[in-house]
Image (cartoon, rainbow, N blue to C red; front, side, top):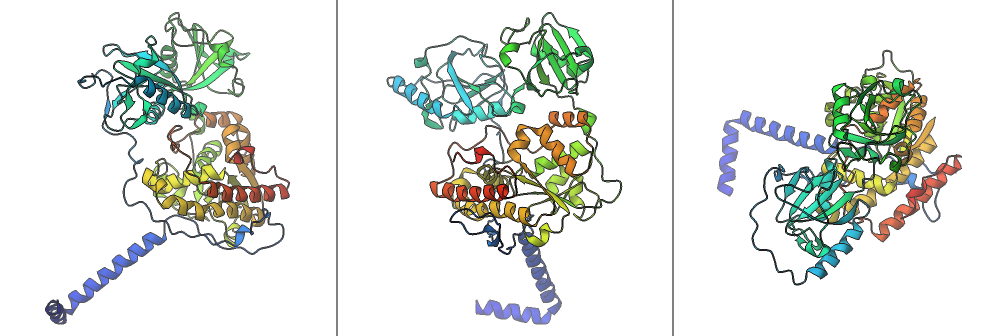
Length: 563
């Protein structure tokens, strides 16, 4: 080793230029690594001075003085949730692989009972409807299918069918998943669905030519689809129906597909089924889609498809087609420099990107950012590239919570989300990207406990600091924005000083999801929060609730508390 060092020393003495070149390259590489690790697009959290009226919770220190760590390393490899669907998807026209002899079913009854206990846990996202006969020549569920003879689970099948907008998910032979909009077969005995799932022995995944079928109970209406069409609900026929829905066609052999295809061809975003009449149009003040009726009022069977509902002459069943409503799609930079800087402030994971999408559609102007995210720019957020003080954007995204940063803005929309949901959303973003998911190893490893310990206090300090130092703050709860988008978006646009057209806001409702929405069913099969975590977060919720009420605001929504 010593001889080698001596030789290198002599070599560089003879050729010093090469030595200095290598040294310069080494230093440049080190500088790049340092800059990359330092600029991760995350806000800094500076301490703030304690003062009266901080809204402290019982037994809790004022959270504004806490300094939060950013000691989380980005995932080095693609998370397990990064690639949502592998090459195992197959067309329904292909037959499954050759099946060998069925397993021994002597304990089938006990396995069926175990499967039922597992199904009870699935009720929040899907409802088990029974065991059904399947036929390889004419499938019971005729949508997409996929097989996994090693890792199939009930949850995985449900998630993938829901992701594609299907109403039913069925499992067969312990490893096969079929999706569909209707069940086209008769019931079988529960004892015939007796094969354990390949990926979880505690659940049943059908049997030989037998399907365990679930109806997907989707949490969000926008996720309910029929193929490419989004289900909007059952509505009473508007008074001026020929004006509200100007195009119509009599269809004696009516079905959902036929009406949706007709309105798509006519380039209308709404397809309304009224018995044997198909109507097309836009959401307008004459037909806002705000007052939904009981779906049973629209439950008349279609003449051309007995398994579907086609509404009645008085109650219309409405679907949103794939035709884009262009009334709210135009966006541009402000024509003159903004006189005030308006912040769109939120804790990470609270829905800031989604709120930007809504604001851009509602106002027609680009939003800016305190940071720069190339992936958001590539998705259409053109204001991402502008300096946040440029004055060309309608508002500026920020996660900052220090006094100096907050006082840089003239007013703010403060977006607050349930901390349990916000922490999980940010953890998924951190390890899986904007619409990806953290890997199972991250949730079970040390990353999740460390993340909660550092980020949960920040959730509280962020709100407390903006309430204290913000000059003109409009508080919007993420949950209220989801529940009543039209009213909340009107409030937000009002603070921005824009007179939003009502038809434009109705257009936004139809385009509300954008490109940054995770699967409604793709969630953990267990609660990642320990009792200690819940106790800590509940204290922070009480602190924020007290601070909001101290300023004569409504406090946090009730659903923050059931933990």
